[in-house]
Amino acid sequence: AQSVTQLDSQVPVFEEAPVELRCNYSSSVSVYLFWYVQYPNQGLQLLLKYLSGSTLVKGINGFEAEFNKSQTSFHLRKPSVHISDTAEYFCAVSGVASKIIFGSGTRLSIRP
Amino acid sequence: ETGVTQTPRHLVMGMTNKKSLKCEQHLGHNAMYWYKQSAKKPLELMFVYSLEERVENNSVPSRFSPECPNSSHLFLHLHTLQPEDSALYLCASSQGQGASTDTQYFGPGTRLTVL
Image (tube, rainbow over all chains, first blue to last red):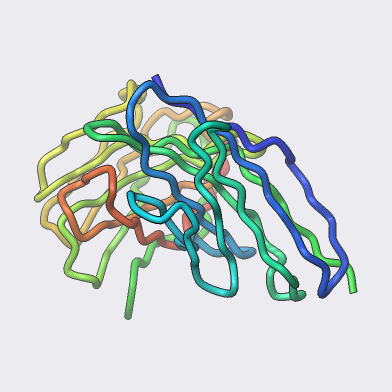
């Protein structure tokens, strides 16, 4: 069975500071990994996904994530955040012939 | 209209009411999904339709009844709900046939309150 854990429910950072949102997964088979973002009063939107190949994945809005198989992690990073990045971020995992499972989300709040 | 739309955006209903949630995708996608989003809980996949056939039913109580009349429309019919069913219900679509690699495109959700 697959599972995904987002270690931080809330992350406050100052504007223009770097941020890392942590995601760990467990799976006995090859995985596909996703980060989605949910802005206030909106549905989820894909930031980036890892299917295969390069372990460093670049997404929209300056975000990137690195797939680390040995640590079973897929942490999301951005070198300098903006007020507009205030949102909830969801890590998700799926696999061949298995449904997608979402984490419980990390709320990113940006302080001016 | 573009993307995925959901109506109504807000719904308040009593436990004895019958109501329906509507989702429409304008992306030409083949798969559609219903999710339940409750506070402080992971997103729960409820149903998946691929080419108008239900391919996933995640042990959802029978008081939730999905309907997919065509590849652009998805409904969730509600009856005799419980207060714990109050949540944000999200609809999504994807281009493929519900494959695990698909990117999903979400609507803004219907905020449901059951009194």
